[in-house]
Length: 390
Image (cartoon, rainbow, N blue to C red):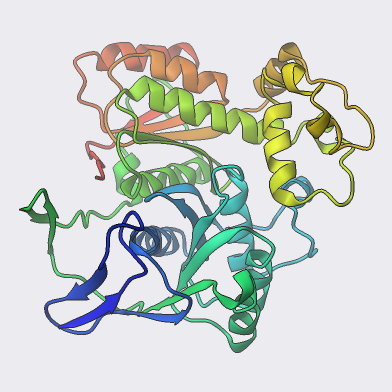
């Protein structure tokens, strides 16, 4: 048996804490820092997610995890000029892996604060430099270049958590966990998320471009490692809204939709032109932008603290301007880890530019959900595959 002592369990009072295997060696090494229990939950779930994204797309992938659900996940497509601006990407050209992490982090920068990064490929210098200025708890990757390791060891005054995992590791088919002294056992959810899950298109519109199919696969793979109930909006190879751990499906769809709306709104000209002082850091900018694009801005802009972030008082972004901007953004894909029980989920998704949908199907109101998609000329595939994760 091999084991690794952890900093503590879910909370500081939960000591001692460890990870261990009854047979064989642990497939992970701590190269720097002292990770805790939740850190490793994020790391191991995150690495599974990015490994599957890389296998499904053939492109370097990354995820930004918080509290055992992804705040964002992405493949390493080139960054647009606007993405470079809203994600604070200083370098003009970066490696695909660095682009994947920048995009995963940029999906929901407020929720990614203090994240755990998961990388599908060997961490290179570009990716390390992308991680360096961000508030992050740690990173997991198959390996690190010497230059990347040197950069990452500078984070958190030398205490940044750096974990290496053996990419050839294959876990046992059975998995166990204890709750209240009782052991649960089940087969691992090793179902492959592949294109054949999207062949049963049930709507009148059956035109699904390859890019949409790719985005739906990204959504479903992300959901496989998101605490249920969950839905996920994806656009151009990255998540733009993840709704995790809600008891009601419509609340998942609303939560993820509001995050998708915020992602679109970060690109609004008024947001790009906000007159921030040059010494205001990323985290403060992210939080302030989040307030600026919300209904709360008018209430807080008179606050001296917020006014002090700007060189001059910015003009508010009205509700009408926000709705008009979002209404022009089309082409998003939406996945759900279980069936939609009512058409209201589709109505909400439509408001955030969703055209393509993948869900298991099987509701007694499937006809209502399909009809709602047809009303908006959307394309929906029934996957017949539930992806609950707890």
